[in-house]
Image 1 (cartoon, rainbow, N blue to C red):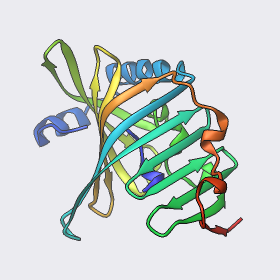
Image 2: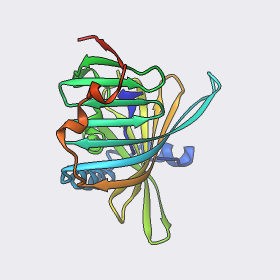
Image 3: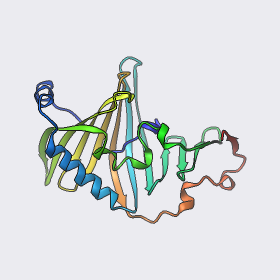
Image 4: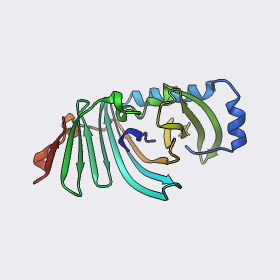
Length: 217
């Protein structure tokens, strides 16, 4: 799951998708995504609370989990279910609360299909984009955007984003795996430019009594 987190989609009719697919690159979609990416890049830090759900008809899976992600530059921390994942861009610690165990690995962003520290800005590169729908919700203009990766070796074949154009914010994203599994990330809160010290992204074994350490570096 760590390689697929994006934070932060929804749908249109098959007719609308087919019609848009016949058009060249959607410049309006690219422009909107560039605005979103630029906005997030200007944040020094960000925290986002989200609800992650996974659905697979083939495997009869339908689950939901609440989580929070913190990003500072190329560092990140993910708290979800009974796991805490921390990364200082050199080392990644995966801590399991259930068994009080932490696994330590070298962090190699090149091996991640989607970089976790890049989740708020990755939408402006490596994708073909098109707008599926626009609508009004209250005072906000909501835009539905579909992304398809240029690299066909990715383990997902499309991403759908729900964007609040008025606030230039990603509200929801869906990642569609080639296996038929759909990963949905509904962002419930976002807090930019909060104070996060570097040590927040490093696992301190002293804070976890009797924790078993498995160093795989």
